[in-house]
Length: 431
Image (tube, rainbow, N blue to C red; front, side):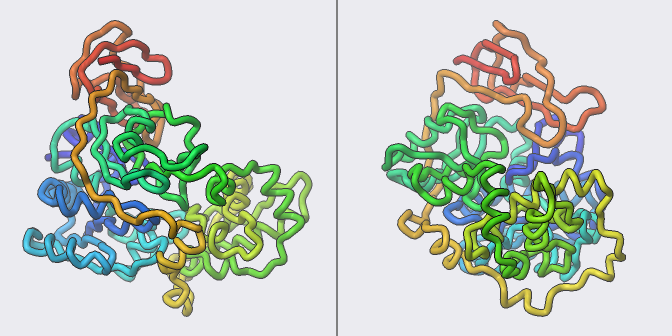
């Protein structure tokens, strides 16, 4: 398996970022890390794949190691998953070992993972390759090991559904059809969070298509505080933040990147809200916010939103060149970092999620969709360009869109047999 073949299969980071894997594997690294932490509450996809798809995952890992020149690999798994570690150990190839990780959030953050396993600190604004490491998640490596176009996605359907499950679904299937396979919503009206509850975004509609990066579908009542928080508008966030922030610093003192030594201080961004008009805080450190949302959804006693204040600040900070100018050796881990990890059980209680079943077994379900919608922009980079036309017949695995010459992006393949009905913004295929 080489980089050209990985590119031809349209493989991207399946954990949410969607960065083209072939591009990532062009870097050189001495160690390859498998991100199997899956630290978002209620998600079980990676754990289930390691139980049921370990062979292609390990094949993909060996191929990825070869691409970057790594002779050593480490699979980071939460220490509570003793059964997963026990089943994997006998299968591990030479040079591959398992590292138990704490059951905390955000253990799956790339920067935290690299430090926990290697002791190295990725510099502010840097990448794992800057410290000789490469990182990929379980499903991405499984897709490499399967050695075929990406036409299906694994995801967990959880929250207010009859039977929380992990499913293999055709890319482009509607959220509603995946929810039906989990027994449907148990509340009405409901909202859908895409991804994990901490870094989620609200779905526009149950008819919205599943993409290569959809890792979770979390169904919640529309009155749930997480739905309200993720649905808040910037005007409201800024107005309330200006009037209610008491500068307690909890948001900063609990920030994982601050504790890693990065120049990020959410409380300073909150302070800036009150000294500019319109509110445009320009705190240099906001560039290095990883948007994990711990400051907003866990640390802040006033239920304010430092994360979104930092996010709104980033374009201004970039425009003004407010970047970290120190040396890598200036970045040092906070002495209390270990004691400030946020246990998943405490996070779930704070988020009012304990009423939902925290399970997600992988189950087989035969999907026969009448229609799939494949967005041309479901990866990092520029939208792909259609290679098919309306009325054209395609089979599962056929190429339907590809990046423009010289553009960062990924190929998209048909996930069902059928007829192309539209190529405007998405490739719509009717079976």
